[in-house]
Amino acid sequence: MKMKYHIWTLGCQMNTADSQHLASELERMGYEAALNPDDADIYVVNTCVVRQSAEDKAFGRLSELGQLKREQPQKVIGVMGCMVGVRDSLALRKRLPYVDVFLPPSQPEPMIDFLRGRMTEAETLDFEARAREQRDRIQDGDLILPSHEQGRLVTAHVPVVYGCSHACSFCIIPFRRGIERSRSVGEIVNHVRSLALQGVREVTLLGQIVDRYGKDIPDGPDLADLLRVVHQTAEETGLERIRFLTSHPNWMTDRLLETVAELPRVMPHIEVPVQAGDDAVLASMKRGYTADDYRRLIARIRSIIPDVSIATDIIVGFCGETDAQFMETYNLLAELKLDKVHIARYSPRPGTVSERRMDDDVPEDEKDRRFHKLDEMQAQVLAEINARSLGVTLPVLVEDFHKGKWRGRTPQNKLVFFEDAGDWRGKLANVEITWTGPWSMQGRLPGAQTPAEEPLMVFAG
Image (tube, rainbow, N blue to C red; front, side):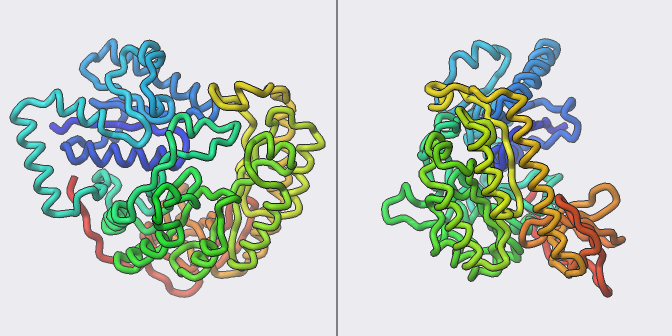
């Protein structure tokens, strides 16, 4: 019987990609994913500490695993991600003495080394034979999806730059994920190609500031260069769509925007956080731009990519933010009418500049009020934007079947549902929009459409 693993992932898309990387390495060793977490021989919690709520969830699950470890000491428990960070934490090891392996972000090696250290001589020989066989079949470094995801996973995330060197005053990422490190073009292309050959139809290139890809490499490529190479790979493999996130206003160039507008498989969808609409708050956050700078950027994006959708992030209740300063943010969003706004209440993170040098002086109930005020306004904005699609036929890449309907997204990342008896997973459907709301749209398939069958290469785990 094969040994089984389970990875519980919290937080951002980068964590999702890290979990997939670890799963790939475990599959190479002969482990298989446990459909029921209780059946897992190896249990890994991939943690997030960007918000206190995520950290609390991680410790809650780890507490349960501590009890499980006492009852079944043969199980292997791992903690991965930003809670571990790039520097070894003695305090964390003391708090979680039952954890077998601590894995820094984007580094599956500690778990693999631990498991290999427990192998018998016969198991080691079998592992090495499997590794040689896989190297003969695929390029070294390619990611092998877990068998239950092959042919079913439609969208995937591909890290292109790890860490961050910008250090906004509220952000814990540079302390937990380290300085900026760009992956090589060849490594990224191998990653994208392997995903496409296993049925993935859309990839999102990831970076904490993805626009800074290549800035740490003397005379290195930039994100526009990378998009062109990945686009060529997409044409060769049948990959339908390419996205990237998250951008930063200071690093989004016209050259990058023109590349997005030119390449048909790069989607017209930009995520560029503003965080606040008041200049004093932005300066306190160490964002490096003003509200008017952001206004001009949005105008440039819309001028160069006319059919673009734009998403942003907002933090409400940052240290010292007055109601008048909050209203500057409210008015900015009401003016710009962006396609999506991710809103977060400020949460101080230990070790950041804002936690060490500023007072978290906005009451929690006031943060809640500001959150809901923005959320209600944005719902009205989105209802107006989405209503323009009523009666329009849009190309939808179908991701999965959800509550009796197929669910997918438009090039602008709008969520669409429709009903049909065919198997549309991973296929493109032309959907006529019959109903719109702020968060999703409903549609139907006009005319006779059937899901096109396409060849799929599957790598055995």
